[in-house]
Length: 200
Image 1: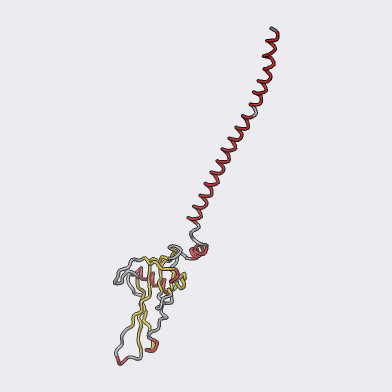
Image 2: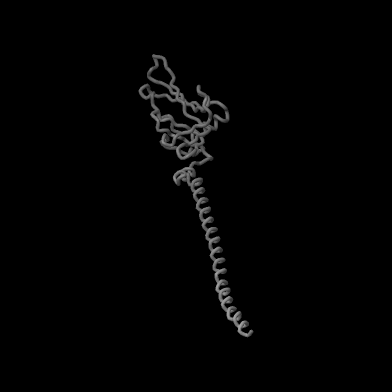
C-alpha cells in the first residue's frame, strides 16, 4: 500500500514542470500581437499622411512661384495696359488677372480707336487723326466684356496711374456714357500713318 502511494507523488513534479514551461509563452505571444497592431497603425498613418501631402501639392502646387509673384504685382485697384506682340501692336486697357498657367483674363476692356479723316484734294498737305477711347462690346460681332489672352501673346503689361490720360478717359467715359474724350492730331501727310498713338 505504501508503494502505490509513492508512485503518483513522483509523477506530480513532472506535471508541474510541463505546466510551468507553458506559462512564459503566453506573454510573448501577446507582445507580438500588440506590436503587430501598433506597426500596422503607424503604417496606415504614414500612408494617409503621404496621400494628404500629395493632394495638397497637386492643389496648391499647380501654380509656379513665377505665377504667384506675378499675381502679387498686378494691382487689382488699378487698370492695366496689355501690349500684344501682334503685327499691329494692339493695346488693350482693363482689369488684368491670371486665369491659369497659360492664360490671362482681361475685364472692363477699352482700346484706342484711330480714325483718319479724309481731306479734300486741295488740302492734301495736312491730315487729321481722331483718337478716341472705345469700349469693347459695341463691335459688329458683339463680344462680351471678357477677353482671354494667351500668355505667350502678351509682349508686356503695365499698371496704369490714376492720373494718366487713359484712366482719366475711362473715368470720363463711365461718367458720361459716351466717347467724349476724342482728341484731334494734325500731322503732315508723310506721317499720317503713324502708329505711336496707343501709349497711355
